[in-house]
View 1 (cartoon, helix red, strand yellow):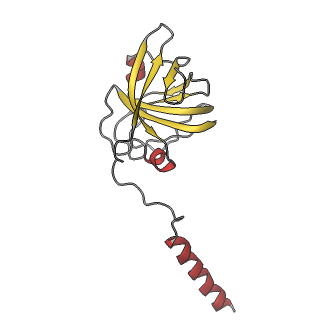
View 2 (spheres, rainbow, N blue to C red):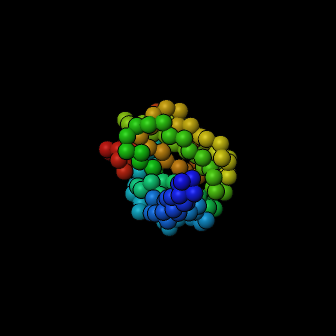
View 3 (tube, one colour):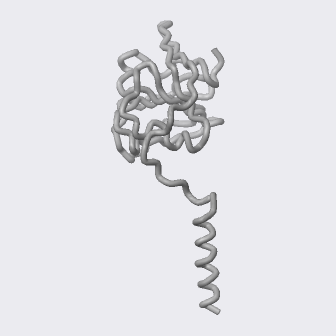
Length: 160
């Protein structure tokens, strides 16, 4: 009876591993460029910074994000819509360049910025609370452009 039970366990394990529900293979290179949209950050002083951002819409696109990309041009970035406000832990696995992670609340206001994140780090980067979206930009860009908490984001999912 134990022999039969063990055979069923092996058969079940093989079926699970062969199924489409099995975990996807670890990415080994950057994903193709995603569709882009314009996004504007409106500073408290009236400054406007316009970015052409790739929009990661599927869980697979969001999981890969900026992995393996060796350059993030100053006028671009990657936008992640989480669908509804939630705590979002991010990381820098397979990301060879520093990034500024801009966390955006449901109201379209920047609620937290993680500046110059550490390339290749597996440490979690907290959103600092529930957010609706995350914007990844070139490392150091938010300080250079004086983008800060409280600034408003317009475009993609946030009304202009």
